[in-house]
Length: 149
Image (cartoon, rainbow, N blue to C red; front, side, top):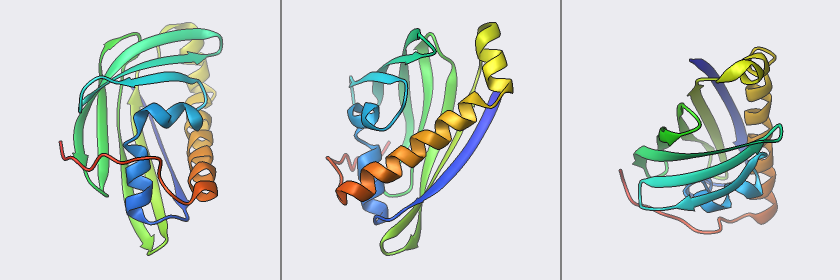
Protein backbone atom coordinates (compact mmCIF):
# COMPACT_ATOMS: atom_id res chain seq x y z
CA UNK A 1 0.00 0.00 0.00
CA UNK A 2 1.14 3.54 -0.74
CA UNK A 3 0.40 6.54 1.46
CA UNK A 4 -0.18 10.23 0.96
CA UNK A 5 -0.67 12.98 3.53
CA UNK A 6 -1.52 16.56 2.60
CA UNK A 7 -3.05 19.52 4.41
CA UNK A 8 -4.20 23.05 3.67
CA UNK A 9 -5.51 26.01 5.63
CA UNK A 10 -8.92 27.25 4.52
CA UNK A 11 -10.34 30.61 5.61
CA UNK A 12 -13.69 29.34 6.86
CA UNK A 13 -14.78 28.12 10.31
CA UNK A 14 -14.35 24.43 11.14
CA UNK A 15 -18.07 23.68 10.93
CA UNK A 16 -18.26 25.21 7.44
CA UNK A 17 -15.34 23.16 6.08
CA UNK A 18 -16.64 19.99 7.75
CA UNK A 19 -20.21 20.53 6.56
CA UNK A 20 -19.05 20.91 2.95
CA UNK A 21 -16.91 17.76 3.17
CA UNK A 22 -20.05 15.78 4.08
CA UNK A 23 -21.60 16.77 0.73
CA UNK A 24 -20.00 13.94 -1.25
CA UNK A 25 -22.08 14.55 -4.38
CA UNK A 26 -20.39 17.99 -4.67
CA UNK A 27 -16.85 16.51 -4.77
CA UNK A 28 -16.69 16.69 -8.61
CA UNK A 29 -16.81 20.48 -8.23
CA UNK A 30 -13.30 20.47 -6.73
CA UNK A 31 -11.83 16.97 -7.15
CA UNK A 32 -10.09 16.44 -10.46
CA UNK A 33 -10.95 13.09 -12.03
CA UNK A 34 -14.13 12.53 -9.99
CA UNK A 35 -16.95 12.26 -12.50
CA UNK A 36 -19.83 11.44 -10.14
CA UNK A 37 -20.58 10.36 -6.57
CA UNK A 38 -23.90 8.96 -5.45
CA UNK A 39 -24.78 8.93 -1.75
CA UNK A 40 -26.59 5.59 -1.45
CA UNK A 41 -27.02 5.46 2.33
CA UNK A 42 -25.75 7.48 5.30
CA UNK A 43 -22.52 5.46 5.13
CA UNK A 44 -22.24 4.19 1.53
CA UNK A 45 -21.16 6.17 -1.54
CA UNK A 46 -20.70 5.04 -5.14
CA UNK A 47 -17.86 6.73 -7.06
CA UNK A 48 -17.20 7.06 -10.79
CA UNK A 49 -13.73 8.43 -11.59
CA UNK A 50 -11.80 9.03 -14.76
CA UNK A 51 -8.05 9.53 -14.49
CA UNK A 52 -5.67 9.34 -17.42
CA UNK A 53 -8.53 8.26 -19.67
CA UNK A 54 -9.27 5.26 -17.45
CA UNK A 55 -12.74 5.10 -15.88
CA UNK A 56 -13.21 3.30 -12.56
CA UNK A 57 -16.20 2.61 -10.35
CA UNK A 58 -16.15 1.64 -6.70
CA UNK A 59 -18.08 1.89 -3.47
CA UNK A 60 -16.72 3.53 -0.34
CA UNK A 61 -18.06 3.10 3.16
CA UNK A 62 -17.84 5.85 5.77
CA UNK A 63 -16.31 4.05 8.75
CA UNK A 64 -16.17 7.00 11.14
CA UNK A 65 -17.75 10.43 11.08
CA UNK A 66 -17.54 12.86 13.99
CA UNK A 67 -19.00 16.33 13.33
CA UNK A 68 -16.37 19.07 13.01
CA UNK A 69 -13.55 16.55 13.61
CA UNK A 70 -13.18 13.74 11.07
CA UNK A 71 -14.52 11.65 8.22
CA UNK A 72 -12.91 8.24 7.57
CA UNK A 73 -13.62 5.83 4.73
CA UNK A 74 -12.58 2.61 3.06
CA UNK A 75 -13.45 1.10 -0.29
CA UNK A 76 -15.65 -1.97 -0.02
CA UNK A 77 -15.86 -3.18 -3.61
CA UNK A 78 -15.06 -2.14 -7.13
CA UNK A 79 -11.98 -1.20 -9.08
CA UNK A 80 -10.05 0.74 -6.42
CA UNK A 81 -8.56 -0.11 -3.05
CA UNK A 82 -8.05 2.75 -0.64
CA UNK A 83 -8.78 3.99 2.86
CA UNK A 84 -8.33 7.36 4.46
CA UNK A 85 -9.36 10.06 6.87
CA UNK A 86 -9.92 13.80 6.61
CA UNK A 87 -9.56 15.77 9.83
CA UNK A 88 -10.53 19.35 10.60
CA UNK A 89 -8.48 21.49 12.99
CA UNK A 90 -9.40 24.97 14.25
CA UNK A 91 -6.55 27.42 13.63
CA UNK A 92 -8.62 30.55 14.35
CA UNK A 93 -12.36 31.22 14.46
CA UNK A 94 -12.35 31.74 10.71
CA UNK A 95 -9.51 29.41 9.65
CA UNK A 96 -9.44 25.61 9.49
CA UNK A 97 -6.61 23.22 8.72
CA UNK A 98 -7.94 20.37 6.57
CA UNK A 99 -5.67 17.31 6.67
CA UNK A 100 -6.12 14.31 4.37
CA UNK A 101 -4.35 11.00 4.96
CA UNK A 102 -4.89 8.16 2.51
CA UNK A 103 -3.58 4.67 1.80
CA UNK A 104 -4.11 3.21 -1.65
CA UNK A 105 -3.10 0.17 -3.62
CA UNK A 106 -1.98 1.08 -7.14
CA UNK A 107 -2.98 -1.57 -9.66
CA UNK A 108 -1.15 -2.25 -12.87
CA UNK A 109 2.01 -0.79 -14.31
CA UNK A 110 0.57 2.66 -15.14
CA UNK A 111 -0.73 3.31 -11.62
CA UNK A 112 2.43 1.94 -10.01
CA UNK A 113 4.65 4.21 -12.14
CA UNK A 114 2.30 7.16 -11.54
CA UNK A 115 2.51 6.53 -7.79
CA UNK A 116 6.31 6.41 -7.88
CA UNK A 117 6.35 9.70 -9.81
CA UNK A 118 4.16 11.38 -7.17
CA UNK A 119 0.99 11.65 -9.26
CA UNK A 120 -1.40 10.82 -6.40
CA UNK A 121 0.31 13.26 -4.02
CA UNK A 122 0.02 16.05 -6.62
CA UNK A 123 -3.60 15.11 -7.31
CA UNK A 124 -4.52 15.26 -3.59
CA UNK A 125 -2.67 18.54 -3.18
CA UNK A 126 -4.51 20.02 -6.18
CA UNK A 127 -7.86 18.76 -4.88
CA UNK A 128 -7.25 20.45 -1.53
CA UNK A 129 -6.28 23.71 -3.27
CA UNK A 130 -9.48 23.56 -5.30
CA UNK A 131 -11.48 22.82 -2.11
CA UNK A 132 -9.89 25.90 -0.50
CA UNK A 133 -10.78 28.07 -3.50
CA UNK A 134 -14.31 26.61 -3.66
CA UNK A 135 -14.93 27.31 0.04
CA UNK A 136 -13.28 30.73 0.23
CA UNK A 137 -15.04 31.98 -2.90
CA UNK A 138 -18.44 30.81 -1.57
CA UNK A 139 -17.93 31.55 2.11
CA UNK A 140 -20.55 28.96 2.99
CA UNK A 141 -21.29 25.29 2.54
CA UNK A 142 -23.76 23.84 0.01
CA UNK A 143 -25.31 21.61 2.69
CA UNK A 144 -24.46 19.55 5.75
CA UNK A 145 -24.89 16.15 7.33
CA UNK A 146 -24.28 16.36 11.08
CA UNK A 147 -24.83 12.68 11.92
CA UNK A 148 -22.24 10.57 13.66
CA UNK A 149 -20.92 7.19 12.49
